[in-house]
Length: 71
Image (cartoon, rainbow, N blue to C red):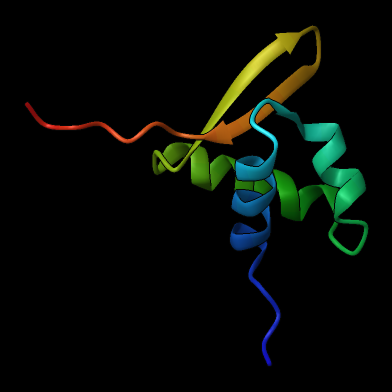
C-alpha cells in the first residue's frame, strides 16, 4: 500500500482542524522537513485548494479553500 502524498496529508489535516496552525502541521508530520511542508502549502494555496491566513506576527493557519459555486 502506498503512502499518502504530502499534499494529501496536509489537506486531510486542514480538513480535520480548520484554522490549523502551520507550526502544528509541522509537529504532526515529523517525517517531513519544514521546506517540504512549506513548499506544498504554497503550491496548494496558489492553486486555490488551501487557504493560508496570517493569524499574527509570524503565525499562519491553513484550511481547505471554499468551493466557489457558479450562479
